Image 1 (tube, rainbow, N blue to C red):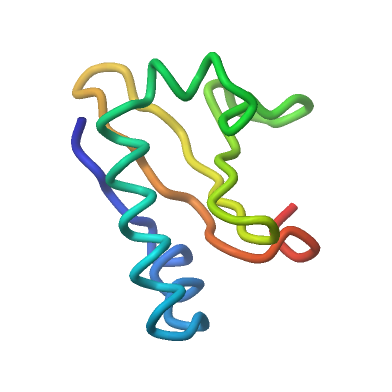
Image 2 (tube, one colour; image 1 turned 60 degrees about the vertical axis):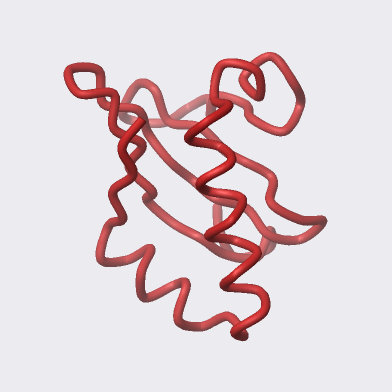
Length: 89
C-alpha cells in the first residue's frame, strides 16, 4: 500500500518532537503493511458523521491520532491529519 501525506499532515508532523515523529512514521508504515488486520482491531475505526466515505482514525499512542483515508484505485493510504487527541477532531 502506497503512503501519501497531505500538506496539512506534514505541517502537523513538524509540530512534534523528533522522537515522536519517528514513532509516528514507524506506526504509519506499520499501518500500511497491516491495514486489514488492524481494521478488525480497536486501533483503526471508521469515522462516523464525515462528509466523505472511507475516513479512518488510527491510534498511534495514548494521546496521538492519525486521520486517514483509503483511495480505492491505487490503494493509497492518504494521511489527512496527525495530532493529539484533544485537537485532531
